[in-house]
Amino acid sequence: MITSMSLQNFKSWRDTGPIRLAPLTGLFGTNSSGKTSLMQFLLMLKQTAESPDRNLVLELGDSRSLVELGTFADVVHQHDLTQPLRWRLAWQLPEPLVVADPGSRKDVSLQAKAIEVEVSVSWDKNGSSASGRPTVQAMTYRFDGSDFGMRPIAGHAGEYELFTTHKRFAFKRVKGRVWNLPQPAKCYGFPDQVRGYFQNAAFLSDFELAFERQAACTFYLGPLREYPKREYAWGGSQPSDMGRRGERVVEALLASRDQGIKYSFGKGVKRKSLDEVVASWLKRLGLIDRFEVRPVTSGSKLFQVWVRRQAGAKEVLLTDVGFGVSQILPVIALCYYAPPGSVLLLEQPEIHLHPRVQAGLADVLIDAIKSRGIQIIVESHSEHLLRRLQRNIAEEKVVAQDTALYFCEIEAGVSHLTALQVDMYGNIENWPDGFFGDEFEEIAAMQKAILRRRGGLAK
Image (cartoon, rainbow, N blue to C red; front, side):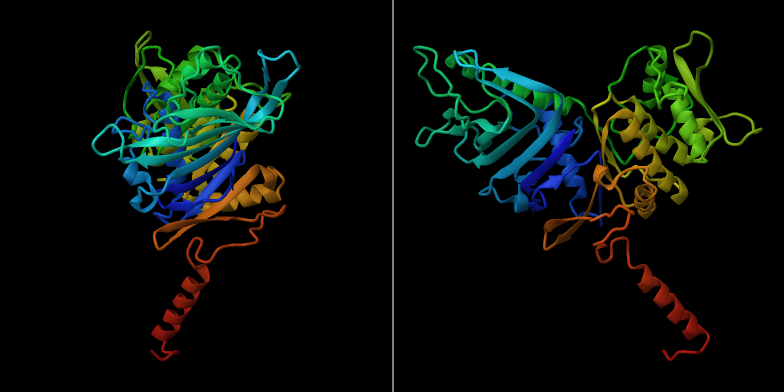
């Protein structure tokens, strides 16, 4: 689970300051206030980690990527290439990581269940290409109270040194390997030469691997989801997620069924398949009474999604019911399909949903973080979703500490973040002005209009 992050000079964010991330983190605010940029940053790190090019500092993406951010100048705050892009990410490991010093006769070992990485990337106008390139200014991993990282060597362009702040640990050179190091691999990795030049630096690969595993278990579902189809083809593949538009949700349902996966919801509660979990939530949210995915004919690779809107009604295809069912379907499925320990990034999951269903979506998210051990970061404009979150806190279905709610706003091109202070009763103690519009102002204006039309108030 990601526990905190911070950004400097990323898009509209000059400096976010430390952002605490909880099992359920909500980002609210007006359009173009910077909410999406926070999620885009995490997606950029994910696709950077998954890129096969270790010389590429940041994978900014293209039309086939999770996120397409353009050029480095496009992502730097106010396009100011004189300012470095800095970021910090801290996360918990599923199991403690133990590192021993193979080059020491003393019992020097490190052990922790959390890692933090801090990176600074700047624009090198003297780079190999005509227009320059982004380069890593510094990269530091913090583990067990000590720093391990790389930094440039003054006066040696493109050359770096390895360093640590650990008081009882020192990197030891391999005899005869006196050369300086090249820049870090991508923006978070140690170059291969580190292992060749130093006797006791192999453990640094564990930090890189931990970062890549964290990135690999991050999944995204975008706001624009696929229209339902009358038929879906499935050849037995097992998708990692729903796809960024939810286009692989039926494949995921079928793959889960094929593997016989059952989900536990507590002692004494019957375990359910993913199909049953989805059907149960759709019914609970009042969308449909019955849900089933079945082949067109026996043994066929073509499948159809059949639903029944109300008890006693005839079954119809998913394409023949309200659009909201197909929109929330991948949201529910991803919450239970993703492996424990996953981080889900949900962008406006409430789109095309009735206000009552938007509120019920909060129940889905809370159940998922509690029963599945996943983390959810949701960007939303829904007052109904937020209100239900507050209600769940008041009803003690989730503790306030397991949530982190933020309000984003922008002024003069600079985004600002306000952490909403939620008490144990679900009350927001620092409710921002105009959070979801001014309800009192709307009521007052309507009453004035009524009085004017009745002749009781001068124009």
